[in-house]
Picture 1 (spheres, each protein chain N blue to C red):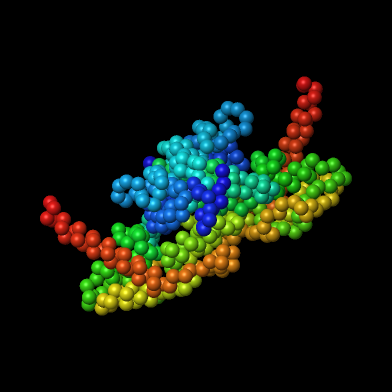
Picture 2: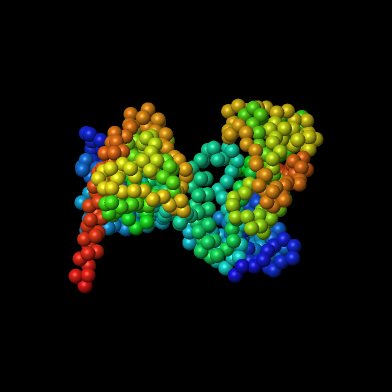
Length: 282
Length: 282
């Protein structure tokens, strides 16, 4: 059974968000749940205990397994497949094939399961989505979160380490813009893969400068030429999204980083607090 | 346990050939078995009954399933993964995603299983391998086999149908050359993907002319512009194989097609015979 959809006036749909315990998935599930849909989230692990406040059903499943993909997509009208083995450049450089293997399996098995269960599923290529609630420590964090954490943890005056010469370039898209583009793509009739990202190219150096300004700290940058850097430059071509969906990012990089830094600085402060009180609780 | 290998003087190895009931797989298994190795073949189906004469062990397994891949690779020193959902341009144009899904799953699961069972596995990209014992009817046959069959079945004088305008180009590599290149790659220390194919570019028209000459029939070509054609042209870049393995194809296209045509003409003759005697056996 296929329902009409999620933006504005709509019937309620039964929607699966895989990777719903993760960064983009949790934001997406939150949005869809707020709109009044029935939201099932699936992930390999969830932080904390109890049902997420942004969903109606929660399943702990390894989606590399085809049987689990069939279970996850059962009786769903729409599927948003955000489950992935992911990490920043340090992590993916180190583990390589494991990331590709897992994501191959998740994507192929989820596509097949969605087809068998007649659920709707578009294909989006995200380009460096960032924002609050993302991974910010532990090794899998991506460059915006990693730099925010380094600045938040630095003394003032102090310094932070930057991998490479800082001149490598990327483009970054704020989470709210990414969710908006994703929903629009699902609502559209467009069935080909589409890029969702920003076409404002920035260097790692520029990003670090913006974050340092936001922090109001006095921080110098130390370059580590031996650090993993990935490709020298990459930008997102978003002409298709502009012409087909009338979509483009609205949140400036400065505004997005301000929100992200604020959230990560608060997390780091909590982490420090936990570490500090630990000895007393033992 | 890792043994030294299969060309020339060697210890016996335990070798898995997946897709061992198919075209390239059966030729490869035959070669390896003749060299004195223990050969296990795996396929989704086998023609005929009883153990293939070119192997020591035969398993009927669906390699889209990861558990079956582990079973197949168990206690093997080397793995040649020739299992694939495959077909000519007519078949793959029609079914599309099914071929990609199956081959994704086979390749990812076999790579993972070979890694877990510590078997050796190189990556080769074949470019249009042809020769005797390949599929020649039923819809999955590729262009050399399809044209050989059409010519073999045509009256003289007569005509054959050619998909498209005949000016689309490809390059074709004879099975014996492909096996030789594959074995050399496995014996080498080269761990990156490598093209195995021919760099002699021919049009479909030229190929048809060669086959017609071989048949000594008087046959005209009828072009069917509505037939599936695939990409307009594709050649194989085999510089890597030449420089790393000292390998290049030795069998001329004319000599290879002569062997292929001879075998397919004999098959078609047998098929006709079966059809003709059928009414009498009823």
